[in-house]
Each structure stands twice: as structure tokens, then as C-alpha cells.
Image 1 (cartoon, rainbow, N blue to C red):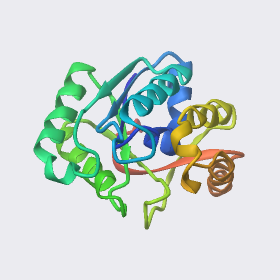
Image 2 (cartoon, rainbow, N blue to C red):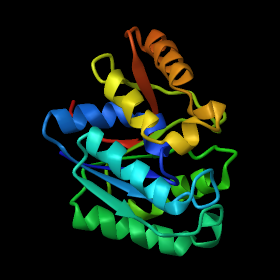
Image 3 (cartoon, rainbow, N blue to C red):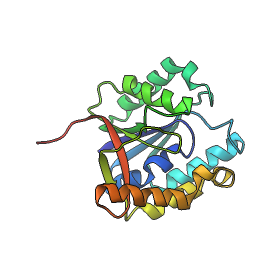
Image 4 (cartoon, one colour):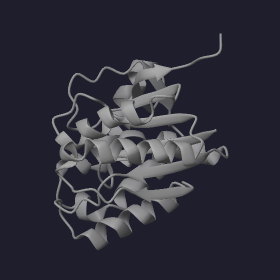
Length: 203
């Protein structure tokens, strides 16, 4: 399977679905990570953020890292560019499944990525939305058991040292607690949850 995970900033994808991506990579799926911005407005400079993302990507054993190079905080002003970027990545990587931000999110960049995914991946039959600390109304109905992948997920998050040192929302203990709570919903030990935008299944 060819998988595409899309995040607005470095660390978004790891928080939302890092365990799931590690499982994909571990079974031989080709996983591409598309990061729309380099997080220039957040703690740390762009060189640090890019370096952290590169280390995290390698730790999760993801195949490709694509940078969108769009402005942090201003993705809503670059929707057409973002849609074209997602569309071209989907075509180049022959993507089968996409993980993207949940569309209801108080961060404008996250919302812009979600809605741009729906346009840029309009021909893709599997699109799953992941949650995060700034999402609201997130009620997952699709779950992935990450009991064996929670260690790599948390280690990948810790690669983003500029963020873990300055934000309670990027706290490994809280993220593990969320996986435990999500697992309880799915009758699993530790899980990540998703809201399907579109999902094709075999009967």
C-alpha cells in the first residue's frame, strides 16, 4: 500500500497518527509524509524544525519526506497552491490511503490542510482524518491498535525538542494517555482514532 500522511507543521502527523504510520512502514508499506510548512512561527528556527522532522521521519521508517514550503500561519491564503501540492503528491506516489487533519480545528492551518485534502485527493477512495489537541468535535469511529507502535510514536514526538520543551500540547505522557483513552473506546489497549471522510471497504 502507498500511504500519504499530511500535516500543516512539523510534529502534527506524529501526534495524530504516528503509531499508525509506524505500523504501515513496519509491514512494508511506502509511507510519504507531506509537511505543508516548516513551522517558522513556532518555537525554534526553521533549520531546527526541519532537522527535527527529518529525524522523526527516519525513526518512524517513513520512506519520503516532502516539504510544501508554504507560509506558517497563512495556509488559508494559499488554498489553491496547497490543493495542487496535495494532488501532485497523490499522483506521483500513486497513493492508496491518506491521513490528514480533522476538518474542525481551531488552528486555521490545520483546517486549511483538511479541506485542501478533500479537493487535492478527490479521486482517492480512502481518506481518514486524525485528531489533535486543537481539534474540536472529534469523534473517531475507525481505530488502529498501536500497542506495539506507541514506543516509536512517542520517540518520534520527542524528536521535536523545540516543541516538547515549550508546549504542554506536545507532552509524551499526555499523548500516551490519549492513546489509552482511545484504546478504551475501541476495546483495545492503546489506539489511534480516525474520522473517515471517505473509506472504501471490501464486503
